[in-house]
Amino acid sequence: MLQVQKENKKENIRYPWDDIDGKFYPYVRIPIDPKVTTIVGANESGKTHLLSAIRKGITGKEIQYEDFCRYS
Image 1 (spheres, rainbow, N blue to C red):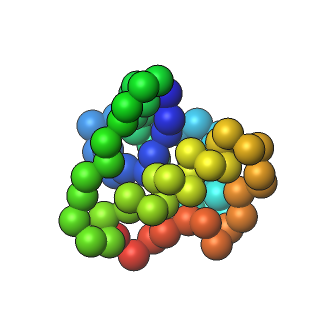
Image 2 (cartoon, rainbow, N blue to C red):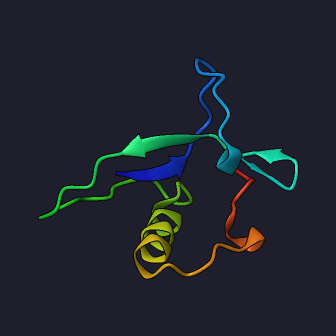
């Protein structure tokens, strides 16, 4: 499972990793198939951010504040 940023007004559950520098970044889980996963979306919808998150999750590279996108 991979977690990706998404606004979810139904749940008010807050985890420690949801708050960064006083800003709230809620998450949703996305199942990743071990064989094939297709990522489809409009321009500026977060496809590249998703791939960056997967890369950082696999490599263990530290997430920086600049990695968060708040303009959508």
